[in-house]
Image (cartoon, rainbow, N blue to C red; front, top):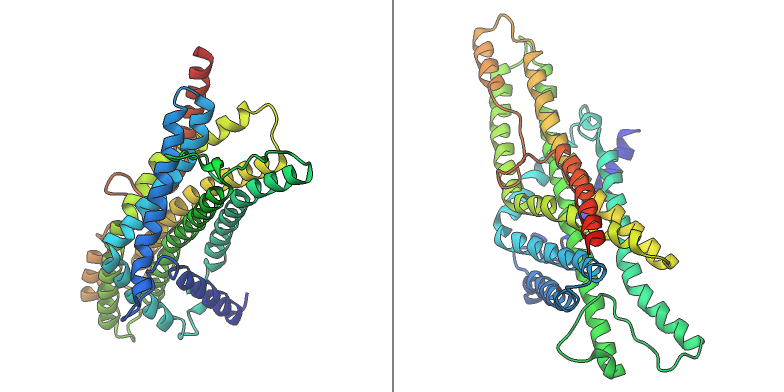
Length: 389
């Protein structure tokens, strides 16, 4: 792929990531308006209200495993969205700092035509995984809203009276929603906004993590290139100083990344297995299933697997690239230059860059494997409980 095509693809990738920050009110702006400042809190409020409405459904049907599993997966998803927005609100300063450090420097790197293809080598993988995740997310959001509408339209054309109005999510409110068509429309609009909020929050937060990882990898690739092309004619001391300064900057970015996304990744580790288990349990317990429901379950399951893999894979990529950077240091032309050799030894003592989830576990593909294994274990546990009852 040509450098111009890579540059064009990266600009599109970056522009989409920046636009995703707008709905959650996190786009860098020196003088944001009142509505922009309120957006994070509005998104959080919608998720909290929807969480409690679905919690009412789960509590009402606590004795029915099928109903509990139906509501539990969606309830946890809204709790996840609430938690994500909470992390962004609390660590907003760190997030703005992360964007201000990584984005301008990466743009400067792209002006160096001799290393553009090296820096953007993994761009296609990052983009495709992100687009795949966003595709499943949009499909889920659309299907959630379309299924109840199709049900109402079908009842209307088949002359079913009275029409049974279905809301988007399994929720229980303190009042009877179906008692009035106006009341139903109000709650349907509310749940539609809640589903849109869920999609935008999930799309923004989950896409930003691999994007920032990609920007950090670009800097490490520049270091590896500079160290590998150092020789006696170069000003090796300047190159070493620049690499050390930038490496410290990357460590600072890694720390900010852990503050923002560490709790989110830990939460995903603990909840995605439960969500996947409940979805698979619902599918296996259904005697008949409509095409719309089957499509929704397939998209939702794929979404959750992709979400877990995206975080885990991005963390592994950063660690692998930092190990490649250490290999480049060792393979550089350091023989015969004692001062340069001392600097190389000090740099080799640095540990690989690892992103951790609240110092509990390293963000790597091991997390994805753990989620898959836990999902299977939870599923068989539910089947055992069901047969026991």
